[in-house]
Length: 114
Length: 110
Image 1 (cartoon, chains in turn purple, yellow):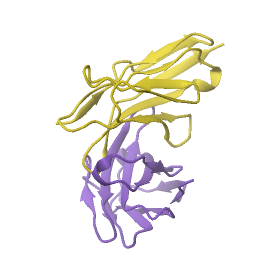
Image 2 (cartoon, chains in turn purple, yellow):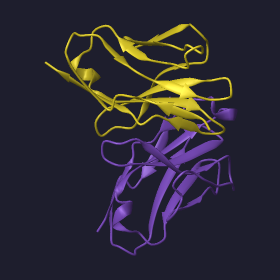
Image 3 (tube, rainbow over the protein chains, first blue to last red):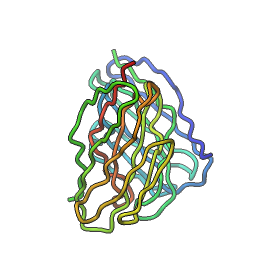
Image 4 (spheres, rainbow over the protein chains, first blue to last red):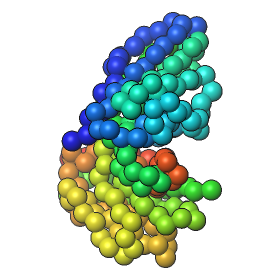
C-alpha cells in the first residue's frame, strides 16, 4: 500500500505568520500534489511537482509556495498566513505519466489561521 | 478544456435502496475516469477506475461503466448501507493531474 504522510496534522497559526506543511512519500512516485479542501467542498489544486526540483502552479497558487527538494518530500509554504487560508490541506502522490494513474493521499493537515 | 460534472450535490437515501451518482465529462483525449470516496475526516481513497469503453468495473459493491458515446461514468450500487455515507468524487485524467468533479455528498438514513 502506497504511503503518504503529512505533518503537522493540526496547526494553529497567527495572521501574518509563516506556516510550512510537509509531505513525505515512500512510493518513489514522480508526481506530488497539494490540495486544499474547505468544509463539505471539493479539492482544489494549489501546487504540484513532476519530480525533485520542480514545482508547478495549480489552480489556486496565490499566497502559497511549494518546494520539492527530493523525490520523497514536498512542502507547502504559506509565507504570510491569512484567515482565508484556514482549511484542510491534502498531499497526494502518483506515478503515472499523462495523469492516468491513481493518486494516493495523505491523511490531511488541518490549518487554522487566527 | 477538460471538465467533470457531477449534477447532484447532495443525495439522501434510506438504507437498502439503490443509488446512482451521475458523472459526465468533457475531454479531447482518450478518457481515464476515477471515482474516489471520502469518509468524514478521512482522506479520499480510490473506489473505481476505468478507461475501457462499455466495460463494467466493480469494487466493494459499487460499479460503474464508462460510456464514451455519452461521456458518462455513473456510479451505482444496488443496496446502500449506512457505511456508504460519504463524499464521492468523480475525476478525469488530465495532463499530470486529475480533473475533479465538485463531489456528491451521500447520506444514508436507517
